[in-house]
Image 1 (tube, rainbow, N blue to C red):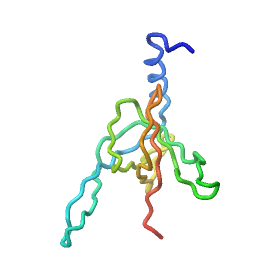
Image 2 (cartoon, rainbow, N blue to C red):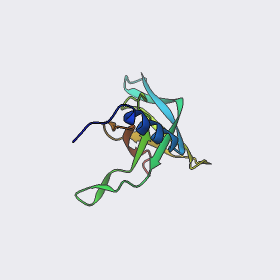
Image 3 (cartoon, one colour):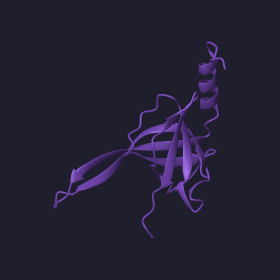
Image 4 (cartoon, rainbow, N blue to C red):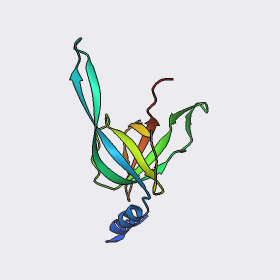
Length: 125
């Protein structure tokens, strides 16, 4: 198997960046102690990012419980902390609401971008 020729990797990354039709906002994690000295997380909106959102990667644990509910493609070089969250704001150019996700594992770097596994954030009901 031969490696990529000069310029091919850049071409892959440019092509992927041009095909990210969704938009998300990075929700940056921070925490402060409450009156009982228990850390309380807060998420502050940060960078707006072009992304590719796949809500149905269909990975299941023992063929029953999905362990990843979505996968997000991001450009190479995007900075994330595994405690951050991501809010999907536009899907195919259409505004969406209440679409917050937490990072469900280590982002993987492919030749053309990052793949970030996600789980939807719910209120527990």
